[in-house]
Length: 79
View (tube, rainbow, N blue to C red):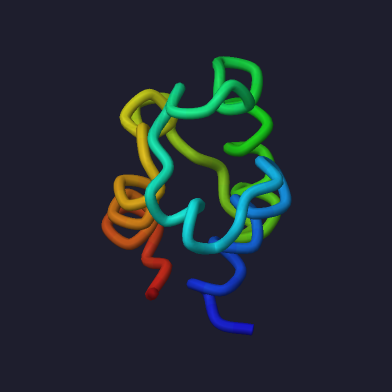
């Protein structure tokens, strides 16, 4: 499984959305991605990639695409 597939899988499972819906998600764009859902998402991503995200990155993580950007730039995860 590629890193992209792992990342996408976290979103589809966490929020019970299709892959097409997942790639368009933004923070608070759906009821499940509220502040609690955000922390659960971060925890799942940290576990999936065996990383510990910086607080600033957790705050900046506001969409599917932004998350990919942060993980690539700050955690050397290639997509």
